[in-house]
Image (cartoon, rainbow, N blue to C red):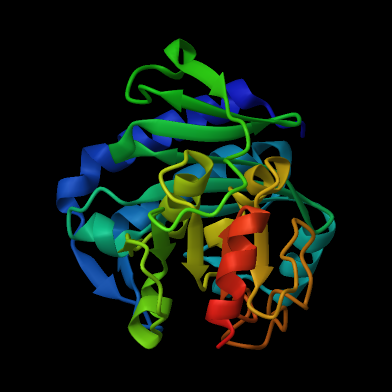
Length: 276
């Protein structure tokens, strides 16, 4: 059950190619919560489930998590589990925008220990390898030909011209007075990847467990803070302080508040504005 980067890379490559092959068939439906879903979401989740659980691991996926019984979920939280978003950013994906991604996080005893995300239309993959965070380009080619580079922490400085990314729900419901350019791409994984790759200096929004499971281990390794608006840190250890973990609640697996994700000095600048 070790995190095998070679195997995960190949699995994400196959997953992305499967999605590309069926993207033109991706008519969408509305789920009960008003979000979009396509047949490609469900088929890709099934593909990832079949491959990731071959070693006996548990699996929590966005499209099937609410179909699982409480006993299974409790075992998953205590064991080795893959937390998967088969398409993060289904709305832009379904409407032919490039801001979508596929995310896999590995959780052991309730702590997210490793993660990988692939951004197919950006031609990028990011992944943990031990204490490192790696980035590869050219992901449409076979995974054994990918060239990896190690990422370093972004500058721990505030920039009034730096891009701030906001989540869809937050953008619809809130405003804040700041001169920075703002972008709402519709994918938490794309947004948080933008901080790792220095396309953005901060993310502000609300998300669920599978939106952040693949990328939170990377943020933590590079010293990028993820905090609730009240200042509570969101760590890789699942906690009821940060996530709704009442299995009978429709809000189960949602964050308890919106979050800010940025380097510490950027957080210092933004938190007073967001708390107004």
